[in-house]
Amino acid sequence: MKLTKIPAVQDLAYVLGNYGCYYTAICVIAERITNKDIDLLKSARRMIDNNFIDYDDKRPKAYPNGFYIKDADAILRALGCVGYHVEKVDALPKDYNGEYIIRYSLNGNTHFVVGGKNPYNSITYSNCVANGKITKYYLVKKN
Image 1 (cartoon, one colour):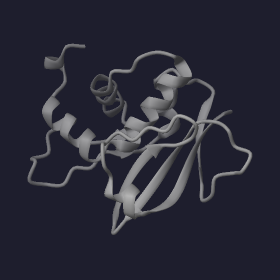
Image 2: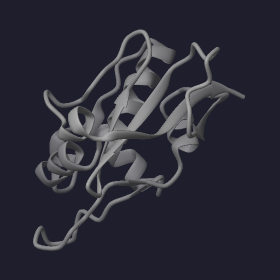
Image 3: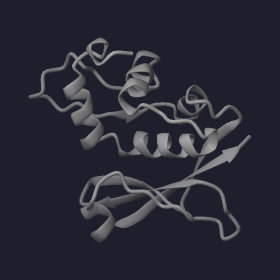
């Protein structure tokens, strides 16, 4: 898909940087599972078009427009991770050795990072990670 085929591509790139950390973490794990590269913007557009992500590219910038993941399991399948699902838990099981995402919260803000043996943070510095607390784990498991 050409960039010109992605409506409001700069707005989409901005919201991915501002609210898309959970989606980015899912894509990182999907790349690891499938061993295939994922184009973040093109795949995000596809997930919006399939109604797996709530985002309105026609909304004026003056109004808040989050990037809410409606169905993480459907996103995993669409990215090639057939037979996987996301399980939300409050504490990381001691014997769990699979891929997972950590949600940090601080003063009403959240940030998601990939945990485990090969952690990944989509931004250089996150105040939520540095000063917040872990509020949930998202385990990526085989069905």
